[in-house]
Image (cartoon, rainbow, N blue to C red):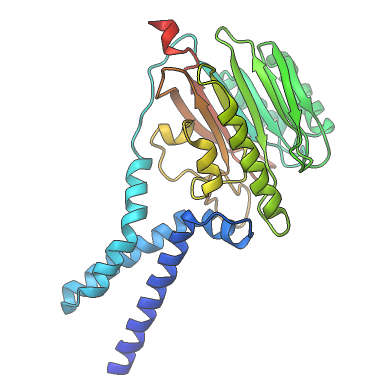
Length: 327
């Protein structure tokens, strides 16, 4: 029995050490694909850390051995602190000038048009960012009524994954259509709403295999672009970042920006994968906003299931009116 207890103890310490190492990758910024894969699983690892703490406390209560419980508490402190922040809401009151933005990855144009157009009507979407949009996929959406709802559009279709478009009920002025070396179009437009704002549609490569270094370069390019924008400008970045808040590259982009879903206190948000044997576990799709004079520019935000695509759609109601104008 002593040998079994010792083996269980060794196994417990090993699992705790591996959990701590996985959590520590949150601060590792390398273009090796294995690290982003572990980072994507950060919420799951966090749940493991909390489960280990609960188990350790129960064992300590029965045996009086508190060293493992103390170590487990140290490891679980990070995910518990992050979880507390993730359920804290910092939203703004609604106003007639608010703008409703939605993003959806169409999975090579295959997303169900009726579902997506229905969501656009339901949420009264003003501006839509589509990634992996093909000519056939866009034609199907237009047949379902998208052209009447959002007639203004910029960007390009491409098969299967490179197409990215911005569609809006407002006039759009194209400011750039870069592919950032990866072949994915990422249009930058000025949305001519009542209070105009600059929108950067985002779609990066997934950090898998040899694409990991290109993915990191794309995130750095997005960070550089964000830093180059005047602080007097209302800026929105929206799309499939193929990155989560557990990745330093995304946090660098989101610095000075507000993630719409985090602002609502939505907790563990999961936008990928959809319609998979693997349950959704990571947020790859984001709407980031920065409005002059408004530290809390998000009014509401949420996700919706779309058939025939591996990503959930994300929508956000944004207060795009700078505070200096309203005062």
